Image (tube, rainbow, N blue to C red):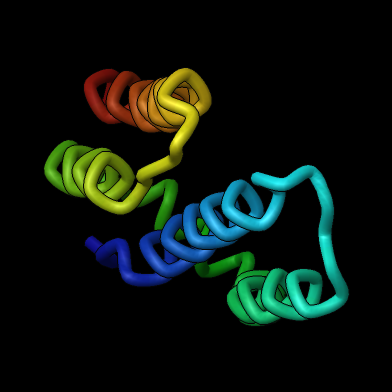
Length: 107
């Protein structure tokens, strides 16, 4: 069992990016300052790209408890003003982790 540290960092980074983007687009415009703030939220990307093999390995090694932990992380961290968008994102993550659960149960 490898744990979920790297996956958790990527998921948290994606959530923070999405929440920042939603916040900055509330007025329908992106100022240069807001664009720079968005770029700051992309700081997780280079590390994720460099360690993509480890991320894949972590994902393939997920057990049922880790999948549940990831779903809890998403539910806890994701807080969008648009409840429908938040529901869609949470459901998409649940589908992805559900597929991993299915794979685990077939082993």
